[in-house]
Image (cartoon, rainbow, N blue to C red; front, top):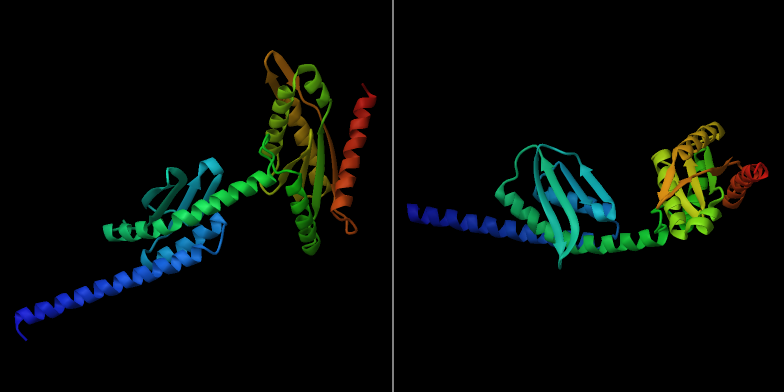
Length: 294
């Protein structure tokens, strides 16, 4: 075999290898597209994408953020070298994604990554729209807290879990004292501001595992997994202390806040209704005492 023939054979092998690689990438992309159609959960989509990405481009970590929607998701862990992309579709900003690993990405690897990212954009947009719709259905627009519908769903689930795992579960009902006066004597906008600030105070005061709901009007509910009666007593005291320091300013008005708080701990015979009623009754007793003193 002469030199020309050898070079020609080698060139053909390179072309064949490139063709095989292109076909493999195309197959992987089609497989990714199919897998990404299986979910409308942004976290699940990110996990699927990360797994497929590592078949072509080894990567130790991936982070997706969309601050406007309150989404911040991670896969793997952060490393020194990073590549970051903004995701957009038809002028709609969908967030930013960052990849990281121990060594730098090559130009070829970045090209593969960008090709795969194109497959993520439309499924992620659909997932974000779905996430937004769910948020609207399950959250109170004024306070940003979960709403009454969300409470009913979470309460049943947490009661089932607490009984199954023999863990305590507490529930608190919180009502703003003399709230009607704020609406009647100042304005409903002032009342809205008080509601928003009380909601923010409660969200800041509880543990990360606790859930805060705006139940109705000026009433809030806390769902407190793995909390017993003593824990509830300590939390009640902490909330009261924080409320005493809260001052809501509306125009020339300085509005102080007082809260009536009731709590109950799950007993074996209780369901959702019984647990809520026990905490609600405790709150009403405290409120009646305050009104009796005024």
